Image 1 (cartoon, rainbow, N blue to C red):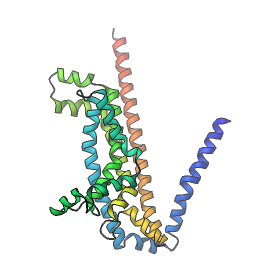
Image 2: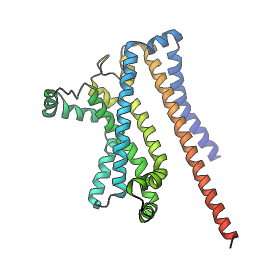
Image 3: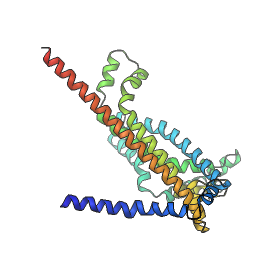
Length: 285
C-alpha cells in the first residue's frame, strides 16, 4: 500500500509541477496559430537572444570543461593540500550552490561596474565587462562552475590511483597514462558535467539579468527575453521561446538518460568479461 501511495504521490507531483505548467506553455505558444509562433521565434530580438545564449553557453562549457576538470584533479589528487586548504577549496567550489544567482550578478556588478576601479581600468583599455558579453559569461561561469567539479572529483576519488601508478611503473608518461588509463574511467563523469553545464547555462536568468542590463538586441539572452515579453504582456512570444527552451531541456534529459544507460551497459560488459575471465582461469587449473 505504501509503495502505491508513493507512486501516486510522485505522479501527482509531476503532473502539478511539470506536466501541467509545460502543457500551459505549449497551449499558449500555439494559441494564435503556428504563424504567430514562428514569427515570434524568427523575430530580430529572438534570433539575437538565441545567438547570445549560444555564444555564452559555448564559452562557459569550454571554460568549465577545462578548468573544472583541472580543479577536480587538484581536489581529488592534490598532494600539497592540507586539510584546512582542502576544506577552503571545497567551500569555494560549493559557494555558487549557496548564493542566489541574483547576488552573484550583483557581486560582479559591484566589482566590475563602470564606477569601480576594475571597471574603470578595463574601460580605459576598451574592454566593457558589465552590461556586455564578458560580464554575462562571468556570471554564468560562476553559477555553473561546481557542476563539472562535483561530477568528476568523486569519480577520481573512487577509482584511486592504483591503475595510474601501475601504468607509470610500466614506463607510461603522464599524457599516455591520462588518455589510456584515467580518461576511460572519468569520461562519463566529464560528459555528465558538460551536459549539465550546458543546460544550466542556457537556462540561467537571475545573474545574467543583473549583469547584462537586459538591453534589447545587445545583451539579451533567451531567458531574459522571455521575461521582457512577459512584462510587456506579449504572452505568445514569451511562451514560444519558453517552449523552445523546454524542448531543449527535454532533449538534455534524454541525452543524460542515454549516457546513463551506455555507462551501465559498459559496466555490465566489463563485469561479464571479468566473470568470464575468472571462470576460464578457474576451469583451466
